[in-house]
Length: 103
Image (cartoon, rainbow, N blue to C red; front, side, top):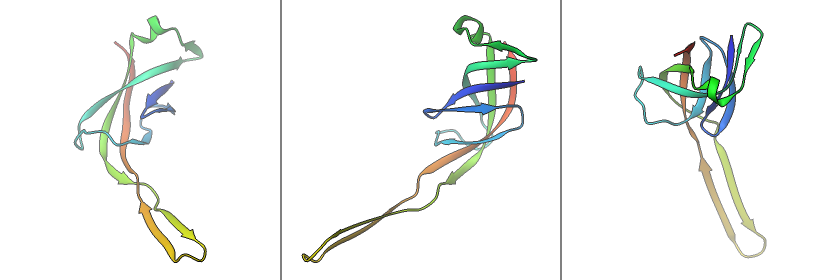
């Protein structure tokens, strides 16, 4: 059994015990998080109707926060002496899917 869920503006394929890296959420480590299912595949049966999906729930446990790769931004203009160096690291949250079940 697996599901396609919406997590942080992206769609992810998940099954039980998968570890996901999603955009940062304001939950503490150990908290339970509900993810919105967009499609559920249960033993070959594909469920994509919004009315039927309302009966399914995907739960996940927050493992903690992590950061993405460092992105370096360099700005330079020739012959003017203009140079700028910036950096950015995106914050993410790691979650483990604990269950995909009907309500």
